Image (cartoon, rainbow, N blue to C red):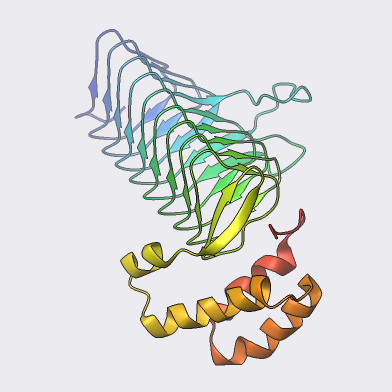
Length: 261
C-alpha cells in the first residue's frame, strides 16, 4: 500500500491488494484481493472493487459503484477473468462494470480519459476506447465495442456484439441493434443514421475540408441509393484522396452485425 495513500478507517482493503501512492479510498468501500489501483486514483464511499481488476492512474470513482464483479452470464463459472481500466477516467455514481468471460477476450477493457455518468452498465468483454462519453443509464450488453470520442446519450441501450464507431454520437433513448460507423449521428429504436456529427467534429478540430470529405463518404453510404457492397467499392476508389475515408472502409469490413441503414 502506498505510504501517502488515504484509506478511511471504515474501508476494507485486502492485504494483498496493490494500492499505489496518493490513492484515496472513502468510507465503507471494499477493495478485493486481486485489485490493483494506480497512483492518484480517488474512490468514493460505498464502492466495491473486486475480481482481477486493474485500475490506472488519476481516476475519479464516485460513490456506490461496483467494479469487477462477476459477469451476468450463466456460462460464467468463476474463471479468473479481468477488468482493466486505464487512466484519468471519471466514473460517476452507481456504475457497474463486469469482468470478461473465457468465451471471448477474458477481459473487459476501458481506456483513458473517459467520462462515464451515473448508472452506466458495462457488461463482460466490452472494449471502451479513449475520450468516450457514456451518459446516464447507458447500458452496454456483452462484447460491445465503443471507439474513441464516441458519445452515447442517456438511456441508450446497445445490443451485444455491436460496435460504435469513433467520433459518432447516439441520441438519448436510442436502441442500437447494428454497428454505427464513425462520424455519424444516430437516433431511434432501432437507431438510424441522421447525418454526420458536425458539431462534435468541429470541437475536435476537424477542418471544413476534412468534414467535406466525411460528408462525401456519408453521401455514398447513405444518400446515393447504393447497396452496401456498391458503396464500399466507391469508398475504396475515394480512399487515395483522404485517409478519413479509410475510417468508413475499415469499420464496414470489420462489422459482424452489419451497419445501421
